[in-house]
Image (cartoon, rainbow, N blue to C red; front, side):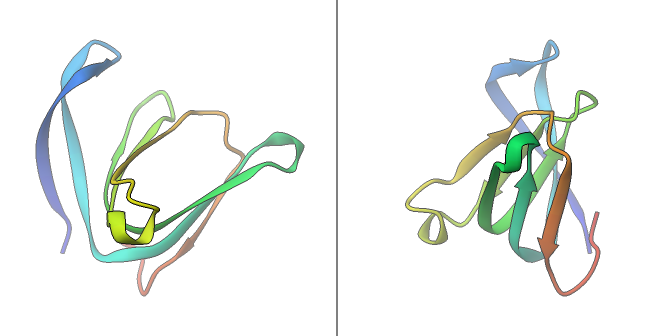
Length: 90
């Protein structure tokens, strides 16, 4: 089941201080974003996501699986996403 989580942020995205995150249940094992020129970035154990109208994705992850990082912002401009998960949750 997906659960919406309200979160305050000091960093505004499009003028909104309130960001709505969707809990991914079960969490994505990984999300790989592909960009032009063959660039890509992968995040592991993604637990929550906020998808902005601009195409920006804000991720909340398990820090143990991401070199201690818990938060990530993926700018728009990605071409595709590969998601390793048991089911489609968003």
